[in-house]
Amino acid sequence: MLATMERIQLLDASDELSEAILHSETLENYYEKYRTLKSSSTSMNKIYKFNALKELYEEVQRFGRYHPDYSRVMKEIRETKRDMDMDPNVAQFRVAENELQQLLDEVSSLIGHAVSENVKIPTGNPFFDSQSGCSGGCGSGGGCSCSA
Image 1 (spheres, rainbow, N blue to C red):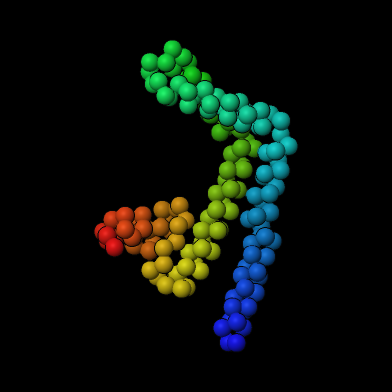
Image 2 (cartoon, one colour):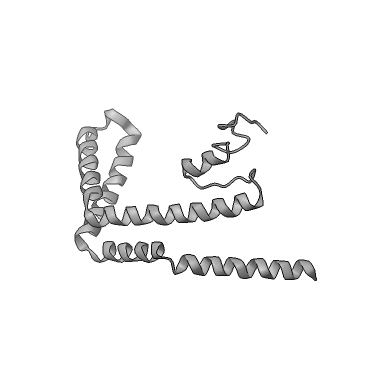
């Protein structure tokens, strides 16, 4: 019975944590930037153009420099990506996306390390991965030089 009550308390606490994240300024900012990006036809056209060129780029990559359109496609994909990346709506969305990811990484790290300092926390963020002393995780021969 005690284990069941403890489990219920943990589930309630996780619900409270998820509600706090859902009502955070970070998530609200993310959704605001997402809506702004999606409502801008100019920004979305840049994204669509880049995605269309990515398919052509992948085709050219299969043949490398021997593809007849290699130089043109490589130049065009770089220019299109730069144009998309420099779009204010895309840039602001990426900043908001990174801030949200950082919040989620921090929460994951806090929960994991509350359990044990040896818990592997896959954040994808080198700052958090290196704090455990083992970047890349055990078994990969990561930063801690372990192999177990």
